[in-house]
Length: 238
Image (cartoon, rainbow, N blue to C red; front, side, top):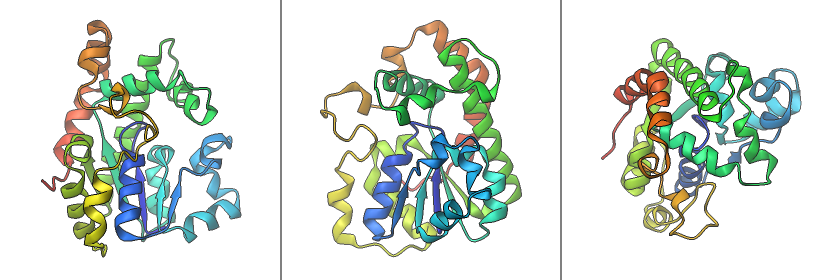
């Protein structure tokens, strides 16, 4: 596992990983099912040798749930570079809430956040998850800053070509310039099969149109400090 792309669900991990794999022609392991459904989730590779081997054989691994155990990843894969996507928690909530309309169990499990603490509402569970992920990222920054690159979702969304090209250069990854322009125009996230007019792919500040002001305020009260701290550590390539 040369590169891990992670971050809370609906933070741009899918688009970033696919763009990165396409531009570098590296092999991508996209969200292994065992990390979703095994009781130990992303840590299951410590118990099942086949899962560990699957990770070691991939060049790029995209797995949001590994954002919960970055301390384990840093210890068990000492050569892995981690790309962590940071998105406004209010937008994350809106995207996860929209995704719950799906019948796909790999999508609906994003709402299962009881492991982060007791809660009764989806927005509260997403907020608890955001804070847990943020603390893992901040601990990783303090312990191994040279191995973690934080990227602001806004830059991936607004300037994918420039951002991904800069990211590849930062990580020392060879890229094929002929591929850059074509892939940067593609919708490569989890909504890639939807119409371009669909609100769910217009992800920057969507909460301003969709979210109840009271819920928006509650989410930011819980997550705002962590969100601002993460943004301060993001690397800009624009």
